Length: 382
Image (cartoon, rainbow, N blue to C red; front, side, top):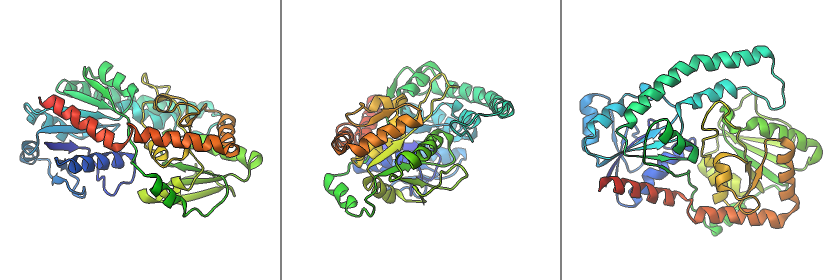
């Protein structure tokens, strides 16, 4: 099968979860003997890249493929006209959308940006948030209208969460919408133990991986937990892996910041930690609520490390509390309590870590994602 994959980024080497998603799928397709054509990503290993946005350039891309697979996220399709042109040129070829976000994800910056958990905001700050959101809403409405129009040509939507399936069906009118969360790498116990042999600190270590600028990463929750731990558990070591430093990063003797780790460095750090956190706020402005599929959650699980994560959205669907992870509320005291429970109960810690690793190895790996996606392509090609 000749697969055309459009995702509008340079995904290799990966710098974030969106890059990892594209990279894992492309490499998985290639591994199974399929050809992959990409648009404007010359660095993707093994793929055939097509550049240019002219009609002849896009026609060459479409004529080289059997199915077109398009990533839909918070970036506006109105700023990516090549998608509409390629869909129109597709003819009888199946069109499959990979839906990662509704257009209203951009409101996260309005309602969550610069927020500090527990800090009371002035009426002026609240008014600024409302005004910031109000300016964005007309553009969001226009973008959703465009998506609905294009969606009439979509055969199947692969949605990374059940919330996004609701969005695909209800907002976009796509009748065949399927849920496929992000996946994790298959890492053997031997490899995990090899990585753990490099551990340097004996302190109970809590690891966070994510951005310091994106407000949906829950860094304000973790900052409050770190503050509480200075008094209640000063021997806990918090390691934060981020791509950039900002004023929102917590500091202190119990915090270590690691900037710019590559993917292997991230996996090493996860394996050398006792617990990992994936804390995410709700999206009260959105009818779909928290819709993301946090990549970090699956990478933590793949490394057989205990997880503490928010009790909402896909985290609640993937994690069975006390079996393959620990679910928590948004309260810093509750989060720290769960970390202390894992710290003081090594049997529980090892049990939930092993449960998480089994979850990845029995249906939630990137290999499973590739198989599901290829099966979807085949179904639509019949």
